[in-house]
Length: 247
Image 1 (cartoon, rainbow, N blue to C red):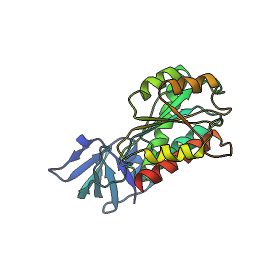
Image 2 (tube, rainbow, N blue to C red):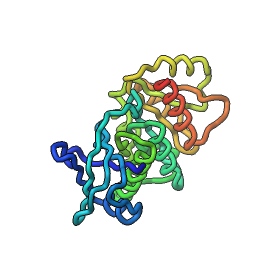
Image 3 (cartoon, one colour):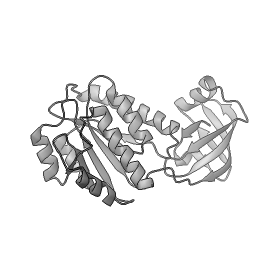
Image 4 (cartoon, rainbow, N blue to C red):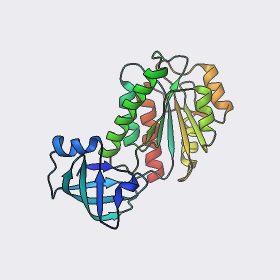
């Protein structure tokens, strides 16, 4: 069943109706060809979802009738922020899509020394808008209750300032050893703790960058004996954390 997101003020609890506006109207009417009587899910982006039927299309809006609402427990019990070194090509789109599916709450693109792609100014704004669309699409597909925020690219120092409010900072690093330490550290994380994951671009982090993250409270971990690509490392750690936090 199709899922859409609206702002809470678009929900008329007294009238049992939701008014959908913007690009979703065209998608509902002309792409999905949803007709009156067909059912959809709508999330208010803050934790409640509404089971609705399409009632009518009016001007630039879709009018939905609320059948019932609920507060399901689809979100991870911890806020996870992925600080991702910007990769080449369109790999970032894949990373964002899968990070959203695996429960990340925020994705922060990182400008690091070994990043080949340079995003600044208006180009960065346009790219971020595209990435946010991918986040929303993945959130709809994976039945998320909230659309994860994709931030505009930041440098390492700005990222560390953002991460200073998080409880645990993890840095998968190819020179890290001791899998038992990694197991113990990840197993000690409890639901409700906030987490930051730092992933380097192709070529990894420079040693000075890793040192700076560790100085800021990060903990270096190993993900095994094999070297993982930048688009694989974050997904691997997010998968493990999802299992531990929900299991």
